[in-house]
Length: 169
Ligand code: ZN
Image (cartoon, rainbow, N blue to C red; front, side, top):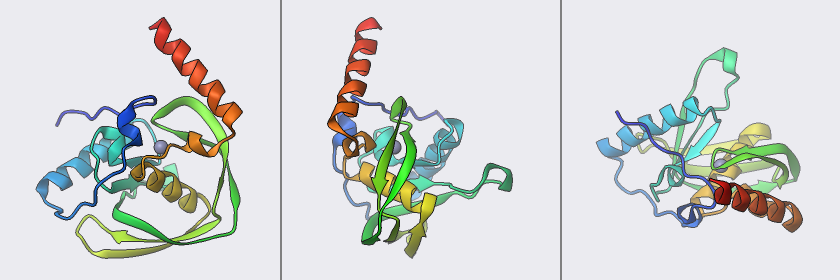
C-alpha cells in the first residue's frame, strides 16, 4: 500500500469544493484505510479526502485520547444541520497548513448528518473538541482552510512566510 501525500497550502486543489460520494465501494474502503495511515502517521486528529488529492465529500477523524487507543470515525457526505453558540478554538492547526497555529472562532455545538463507511446514516451531536474538528474538516470539503477564519493581518503574515519559504527552496 503506497503512502498518501498530504497537500499543503498554497496548493490550489485544497480550495476546490468536493463532490458527494454516492458509491461506497472497495476503492473507497481502500482510500479510507490509506487516509487513516496518513492521519495517524502525521499525527493529526482529522483528515479530509481533498487533503490527499481526492475531491470527494469524505473525512475521517479520531479525537480519542492517545492513551485510550484508536477509534477511527468516517463521515461521508456530511452536512451541518444546526450550529449553536460560539467558542474559541485555541491554537488550531491543520496538516495542510504546516508550522502555523491560530485561535479560530467556532460554533460551540453542532449537529451533523452524514453516512458512515458502510453507508449507514449518521447523526452526530457534537460539542467541544469534536465540534471543532468536525467544523474544521467539513470546511475542507467546501474548499475552506482555517486560515480563512483568522484576521487578514495574521493570514497575510502566514502567506508571506510561505512565499519566502518557497523562494528559498
Ligand atoms: Zn485541516
